[in-house]
Image 1 (tube, rainbow, N blue to C red):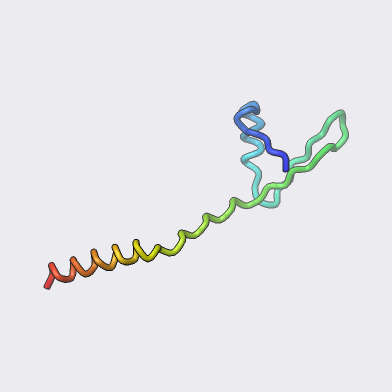
Image 2: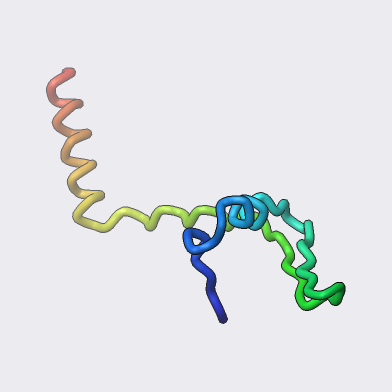
Length: 72
């Protein structure tokens, strides 16, 4: 896959590329001939947080137990 750093492009072109909506197409034309089409995609969904590790779960449980002991 080829990549293009938007920071290397003129601001107007970078804005045009980043402003494409999902399903919207941008046609690249050179000398009146279509040379390429770019299709906008939806932003990727954020990755869910991994489940807490055993150590983290034990730490959370210990904090909870401490709070309960302090309350009662």
